[in-house]
Image 1: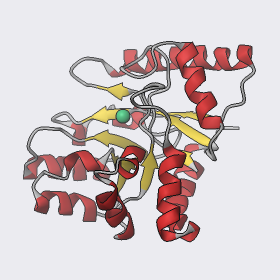
Image 2 (image 1 turned 60 degrees about the vertical axis):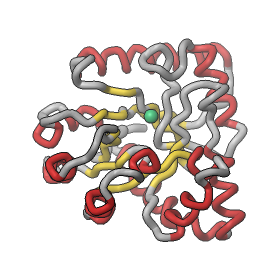
Image 3 (image 1 turned 180 degrees about the vertical axis):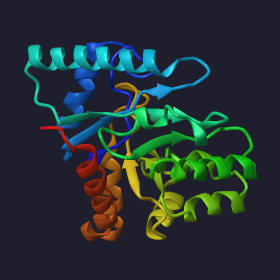
Image 4 (image 1 turned 30 degrees about the horizontal axis):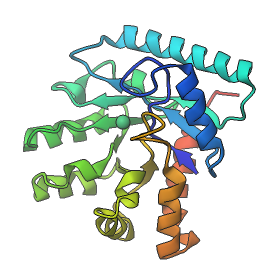
Length: 239
Ligand SMILES: [Fe+2]
């Protein structure tokens, strides 16, 4: 299994505060059946410029790798990505390809939290017309009270993929809805969106177990195929 959404890189966003916390998070993940983790720190265009963000990400990645080496912990494969918060103009942004997951053409987009409108959905779709990028919508469960027609338009758009967080399945208040959306084939990717070891800990395996307990192991095929496609692209040129 792949965790495509995490905030494990130390000191770059509201996720892991330091290398020690990052190593604890990775140790927790290594106890689970997860072989690859995408490190996807938040990028907010109104707060960061792309180049300084990417430089900070490189430094945080280097710090983390040194921590892993020094501590000798076993660790899944780590690949860099980002979680881009929507901003006006993102559909035509020349910078967006710099935020892809590894060497892939997939980009993880965090939609806006205020009320959606047709222009917003058009712009998300427009990202996909930009150099054949493939959009992954982060934590879809946070947007289920948005306009139903716009939500459906986004979900049904070819080239747009839908990610949900493990917590959507784990939380008993939302589990039924999560499993229904999974059964309907709406969810393409899973992620923990882990930020720390307490309130938002690495918890992907727990969600996977809930899904397979309900539908059987073969129900993960769709997720695994998408993971394989993402990983194959992401690893291009990486030894
Ligand atoms: Fe996130």
